[in-house]
Image 1 (spheres, rainbow, N blue to C red):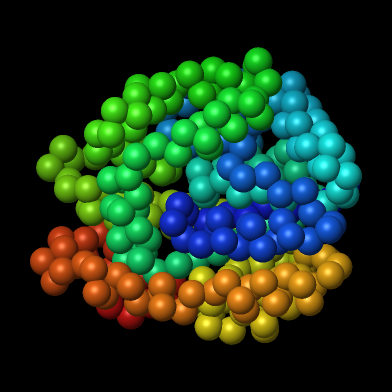
Image 2 (image 1 turned 60 degrees about the vertical axis):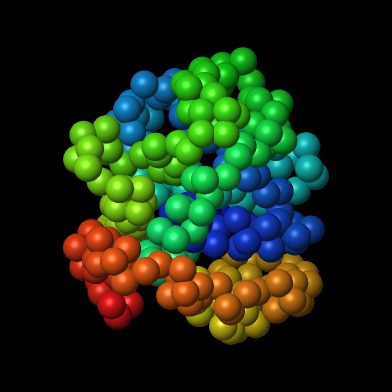
Length: 279
């Protein structure tokens, strides 16, 4: 059984990329099985998990759940994506020392714009039901912890947080506006992932930039397919070429005002420039 994990912040293109990889006949792809990752670590207060959070029962449970999922789909290669895993690479490596890791990076301004848009939308009831169905009894506490947040969404109210929970997020200044909160989420998430990726063996990791992927899907998808050792690569490349949206790269420029960009600049600029983006 081969395990590969797609790491990236929410709204960074991981859903699109994961869906493409899931089209391979080799792959059993699971979308955001958060409840599995937090098994017996329900009350941590943030999404950060390290080697110290791994016990033998936790290791066995998570490995078995993913192995079972792959076998139920008659596949020998398991891939998943969960944005919170930006803070869990050491935890994941302790459980899956043989796994391959993909880090997808996207311009934080695009992530902030998309996050603000999604926060205003209503709940995806089908996804909520699906996640409950996918859970074992021992994993249900992870869903129960999110009930207050789900109630807000069901009532059609704008939620105060959406996406990942960095360490200390509850203590952030109360005067942060939604865009600034989203900016801080992105910055802290991607910084954590990049930092922890440095400790991974070269043969077990690859880093992709979302913008490069949508501008040259043939080249970048072929490189990724080779890294993962997938068959039927032509089909995946063709789908990537058909469904990529180059216009999504600069959409934030037409949506975020100068005042909004100015409000998030102190939060994201240093991280953007460290990742090779210009302000």
